[in-house]
Length: 367
Image 1 (cartoon, rainbow, N blue to C red):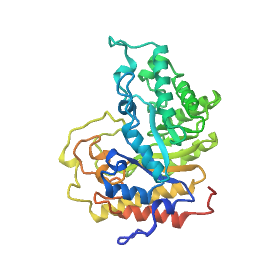
Image 2: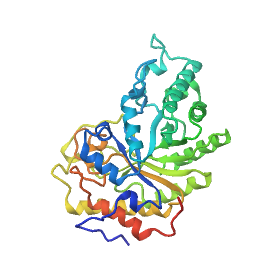
Image 3: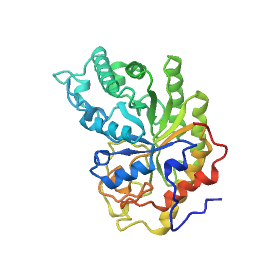
Image 4: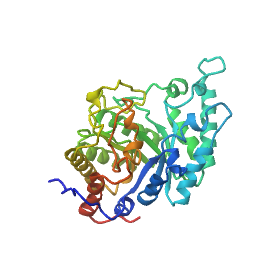
């Protein structure tokens, strides 16, 4: 039986207060938000969330665009925002096949570099970035999206040039740079059994090599029918025996018509805008708002059930207007994937999520 969803009026509590005995609750921030340019959303973030992630400012292309040239101005402001507001600060991300400049993998003639050169560049980058925020950033997505959909290792430039042990090296370098920081593995579609089994095998291998992986991040780029609550439940339960926490790291619900059958969150995908793919340009009908609210309630019921394993839930964005889903995988759409509308006001989904905390919380875990 579904939770009864309020149609008017919203809970007077905040997300971070509602879930304080379950897990941290956060959002990914863009520059306008953490610099205060978007002051209304900045105030919303301060009120609602107790952990933050950066959308882009700590990715390699942003913070280390050229050899021997780092740019920390924006990243420093992001970290300062989190510190000022007493938030648990996430670093996203260190090693990824996307948003990494070509120079990282090439020599001055454009040819692939050798293993030793790339390892040196990796270590320099990780030690510099992680070292700068030692004691400030509490947890790092060390490796992002290393797996194919079938659970095998993605044949990225990191793997091609260094070999499979590039993962081990990344975690070793990160631990050396800040021994106190939590180290995570982050990926999408881990709710699908083949990829999940690959992630489990990967974590076990890293653990056998002495790496302390603190948590696995399920990105949580979900749709209205995938994953099912049962799939999410099974996925969290599957990682629990490894002794790692589970985090939902990039949560949003794409309710627009699918442009592709793929469940991948591959950022390079791009499809042409067609009217039938963009049905809600004038707002979300009330009935559809309720469907979104119920879907969020069903998913959060699973997360609260596993509050002993789930340690953080982070939304990928704050308001609908800021969401990447307005432009991915189809540019120019009007998306509604988050708990706050374009005007910064809570949607029915906000109240539905709050209610899962009040209705379903059982004995509360100590913090």
